[in-house]
Length: 387
Image: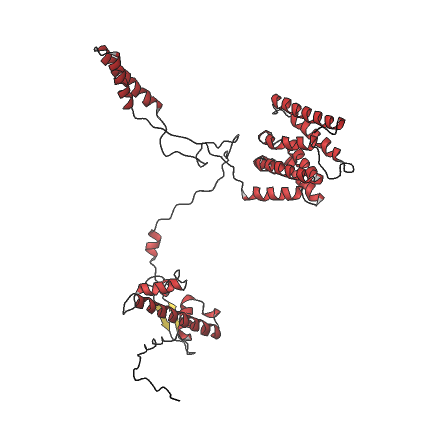
């Protein structure tokens, strides 16, 4: 059996990269002394830091050499080191020279125990220059001034409120436009007086009007949602969880807070939307207990004299009317007392209609809705086959 001998042609293998020097513990101690953290390091800690720094520097240099080779360069440049640091996720690090202020030198202090210390040099400051430096002015004393964030659903145009929907173009100057049109009409009348025909006057008027510079702006009214503060968001979350929770004491405290708290007006739009969605969902699920809890929330809002419920009547009234004349409000109509819920909702509706801000036309519309709903209910009782 023949064996293959060594090949006569030899391949040249690139020599391994030179091994970088190792960082010693003494270097780490000197850096720690200059930063004032030498007492917090143990000998094992300094040894570990030295090994980690040595490994990291070697990795950066070797990766930088790879970038230099790919760039067809024989020498390593600073951008190769930066690329290597970005590759390792160290682009945010700064050189060690940035640890100390510029121009601050280290003083070598020999230690009889054998360990040398390097401490930053103390600068000498001139007292005359410090005394001559003018004292900066005192900051303005903080003060609080109340202003309207929103009034009747509109943001007042004051300096404290950020204007929303500002237009980049200037509005149309109607006075200037009217003056230009008057000038055009005067020009046409002079031509007509000079003996021109009516057709020529009309043509001249059209050309004059075309020369009037016009600006067209379209202003869109944006939806302005009043943002809640962090405290209001926490209060809203706690109130909702307590009102629909299982703890009777927390529920009573939350309802009492809704009855007497003067800051509920800012939460009214969100409370109204929650009442509307929760009523619709629980009527479809026939969960009468949740409907009772929602009715108590509405009752507390109505009782609160500092809350104007008129902006949220489009959410509150459908919920009350559904609880009054709804066909199925519970899973067991023959056993569950759904009449108590209907009676409670009716009393709350009466209290709403007795408020001063309720419009007379709204009362008539509510009466018409109740008449139709109760009439359909009586018709169904008289003839169950009629749908």
